[in-house]
Image: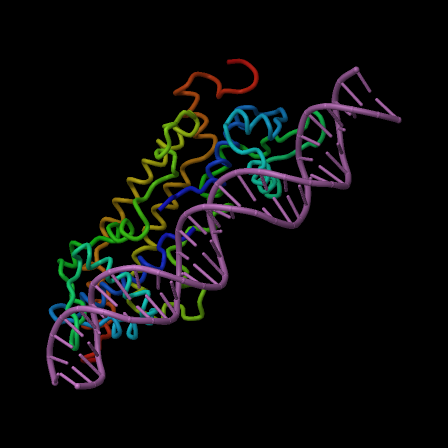
Length: 148
Length: 148
DNA sequence: ATTAACTGATACTCATTTGGTATCAATTAA
DNA sequence: TTAATTGATACCAAATGAGTATCAGTTAAT
């Protein structure tokens, strides 16, 4: 059972890269090269982040993407929700039979509780926090095109 | 993002049914009917539980399946592991490059912590506990073939 | 001994999801 | 004018998920 799929995984890393490079545009190509992720795949995912206003873009030479929101406000849960949908136990709620089965209900109750715990734990993790951890561990800068 | 797939979901419910019926054999057919799950699908899943010694079986007329282990010792995490694989953040550990990327490592560290929390929360949920909750809520018996 | 109700084992099918690629038009700095 | 870039789609292959089908062996009851 994988918690993060490629989209979410790459999105987190792309956003970390943009966060480390705040204030200037960075091209999809350079992010892809730097982070070792497939260019076209990354592009599609950036479009999604763009549509949701986490980043802004500029076309043409010297264009690229730039982080729009405060890194500390971007939670990993938000990214999971964007690329993998809301965390849910199983699909039972989407059916007409809402817990017609009692055993399932008990299970649901128990797991909803766990969902809460998971959710609140993930809520604590933001791009800003990750970047902070990273810089504390690695020195001042995430590997960018510039200095380093 | 779905936490439980059909296999795990059905397995939990099947085990709950067997736990409520401990000591006597119960056929796959009656479990399937009672719990409203596809017969063949259930059969395959029961074979898996059999192979792992959570249940025992007897062929022929009056045959069926019976819970082998103590319901309180059967954790939901164990079932998730059987049918969905061990909970993991992403696949990075399966690659030669074990965290060649530092940003990813920070993320991993953070998420491993969460994994721990999730794991320990799920550990608390056992078939025995669920059955207890169920009976407390519903009256003495899970709907079985017999009384009720 | 025969039969009907079972499990054991395996092999399909089909739809969806996942991860990744390709193409082409529009934009922009140099 | 050109090269570097995004915007928007459309496509592809492999894996996964959910469910079905079949047939051989076993067993209790008659």
